[in-house]
Length: 263
Image (cartoon, rainbow, N blue to C red; front, side, top):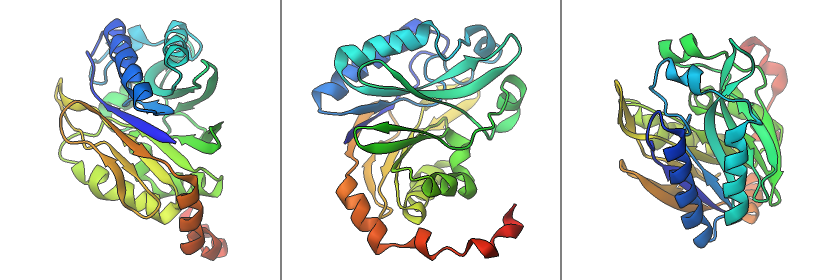
């Protein structure tokens, strides 16, 4: 499945403008033959927007979801987008939702590991570590940014059969090594594809590093963006994944009885 990674910060604070950017990217992705388009973390609102994140938050089935579903259906491409999800008056999650190419809501994930003072002040952590959906014959899993830096999180997805792990992110300077090194290693040690899609440029006090990456199960980059706004495409190949899993039997060779102390 051809996968499109939208490296962009859009316009922080303007959902209308960010939906326009998403629409234009979906058009380009579909024209390039992509079956899936992925945005960065909190793409619909912006990341470093303080209290605005609570004012703009909406339910998973709110108006924004309808807008994204319309975009996905019109262009015939599935979409994963980051947004603040309102669960109640006082509870907001940092979430990512997968919408199918026919507009159906397939999966919604709430970030489980919150990074830094801003996220811990404004968001509630999710408590469901593995969220998946079937898409075009692939088992797609969802995760957000800091979550992928915990090896237990990604291994849980591997044990649950995730083929493509989608990770909207807002990775900042100086942590460029996560995109360059950690993400490809996670893909290799868990025998899956990992799509890590970042914001770019400066937003408030945050300087995002870009470097969005689609890493394969051999640890190689199938697509890698630079440090500017761009749409990059890479292939997720089920046949290559199956062959790689046969050649690299990490999951078969595990000895879970030795790992009890990890918890």
